[in-house]
Length: 410
Image (cartoon, rainbow, N blue to C red):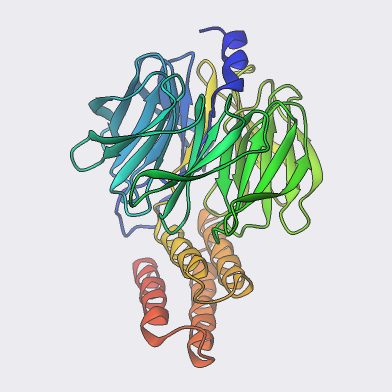
C-alpha cells in the first residue's frame, strides 16, 4: 500500500487509539510507546526515555489499530488486509493468536475490565466483539456504513462507533451488545476520544474539518470546533483539559481547550500526521507522520516539537504503556470522577499531583517523587475528612500510593 493510498482511505478509517500497555509489575517502569506501521507491516516499540526503537514485532496485512488488555498482558492489533486481529504477547513481543473478524477491520478498543475487545469492520458495517479469555468472536453488532473508530466510556457501559459513510455515530450498550441510539449530523466521522469523566465524546470529522462534541448524557452534538484540514487522530489529556487533533492534509496538530472548545494553538509536525497519542503523564504527544516516516514529539507545556524519531514505513497509530503504578492511580481517580463520587475539580487536583509525580520519576528525582506521593496521600485524607470519599474508597488510593513509596524506599 502506498502512502497516497493510505491517505485516501482515511475517509473510511480511524487510525489511532489511546490505550494502555504494560505488564502487572510493581516497579515504576519507564513508559513505552507502541506504533503500528501500515507500510512496514509491523509494530515497533519505542523507549520514550531515549526516544529510540527497542523492539519490532513483525505482522502482516496492513496493521492499523491497537489496544491492550488492562493487565498489560496482550495487545490486539487490527490487520486491515487480512480481515483478522493479531494478538501479541506483550512480554515476549510475539504473535500468539490470529482471530478472523469482519471485512477490513480498522480500530479496536478493550473494555475497562479487559473482558472484551470491540473491533470495527469498515466493509462489513459491523463491530466484532471478541472474548479476550478465549480469543473468539462471541457476537457481531450491525452498525452504520463503513465504521472506523471506536471508543469505550470509562465505566465500560457504552461503545461509541463512528460511521464514515453513515455520517453518524452508533452507541452500543455493551451489556446487550445492541445499538441503543444513532447520532446524526456529521459528514465523515473518523476517530473518537472520550473525556476522562465520561461526559463528552470528541469526534474528528475528516470531511468537514471540524471536531464534533457529543454530550453522553443526551447523545446529541453540543458543539462543533473548526480545526485544520482533514482531522483524523484525536486524543485527550489525562486531566481532560486539552484535546489534540492531527490534521492530515495540513501537517499540523490543533490543540483544543475543552473548557471553551476553542483551538488555542496549532503545532506544525510532519507529513500526514495520523493516530497521535498522549503519554500517561500528559506531558508529551507522540504524532506518527505516515508521509514522513517519523514520530513528532510535542511537549504539552510549550506545544512545540522537542524530538523527531525516525521509524519504519508509514507509522499510523501510537499507543502507550500506561500500566505503571502511578498510571493505575490516575485511572482509579478517573473512575471515581466518572462514577460521580467527587467532582471533576477534586479529581483534577489529585491527577495533577500524580502527573507531577510521574514526571519527576521519569526524570529520576526519587526524593521528589516521595514528597509528591506524600502530598497526594494528604489530599486524599482531606477528601475523606470532608466526606467526599468514604474511608474504604480513600484507603484504596492511600494503600496504592504507599505501595509505590515502599517500592522506591521512601
